Length: 468
Image 1 (tube, rainbow, N blue to C red):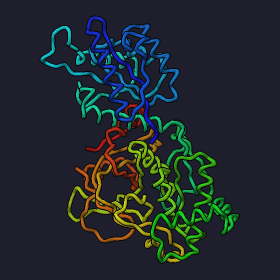
Image 2: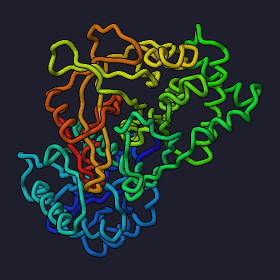
Image 3: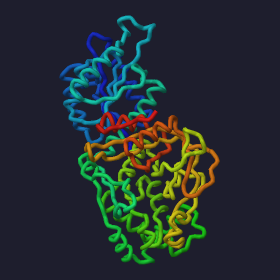
Image 4: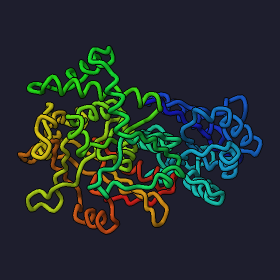
């Protein structure tokens, strides 16, 4: 992940102890640096202790932020004392930045409540938030109304806020690739390109026939094809896979890799069922797994909205995502289900993995045409799930997000699979069905649901359900 940089506003108010602002500035910048975050803040010499109190201070801060707008991912307003409610709001408004904002207030010590050390940040935070609300500026609160900058709790707050910032910044001018058309049997992957475009998400399509044409022009001994073939063999066990199938995969992957690079795409959704098998003779699953593992997520069945969910999870966590089916109940446990795909899951999801053939469609197109899946049992891990969709009737983007856990429950089946435990799963499934969501869901081995819900709902303005 690239380094996250925060614009930092240190609040101050004249009739409160200035020394608290001085200490507060030092503390917040030290904590950010220690945890690997960059900071843009007023120099000490430009305003009193580098804090924002007056209208002139706010203008100086706004100018500084505007000059560094390209590298500021979010703004932290820290209140070592009551702070000037108007100063923070003016600085943010005048900067022109449209980024997430975290409001932190330092707690008072009951043993240090005399005039020389009393903060009143508890109260000041309410006033700052009131001013931001009046200005129509969204902001994020810490879980506790006051929290010490130099605490483990605030470290967690910063990390979650960074995830929010990554999602919001990462969804600016996104470019996805759609390879092939939607399979006729999958009405569930329909979506509106226009709604996505309005949200800043572009889709670059290419016909599967054009990909096949480009593959035909690539020689078996092309250096790029050889490199791709070696990458495939180094990625997963390929024992028993025909060399002819591996070569087809390498050529297909080489062409797709070049197309992604040429079009500056951050992810792809690929037509598979069953054109690739019938007319080319492989499944693209391992190639898609390799892309997702390298943080270029790839979804099957041209499920662009599934791809968007994968990408959002990846932005929040910095780790690979997968797209799976809500597939089976698990015995009679109401809070467990089986997630499955045939499969193209990232290698890092598995306990162990190997390349195989696609058992579901081998009977209709022939086993020899279905080599290329990557299969195995998903390892036990905390997990976040997310699904996005375009509500074409209301013209909005909708999503649900929540957390669960892949378990070690015994299960003997095929493909890529795992048992997922989710609190109040039955209510979630009722919501998915009632709201008409798709059967695919993106999953990521992280705990980032709160950050995603905040980013999509508060800052992106999407309709978001946070399952708890």
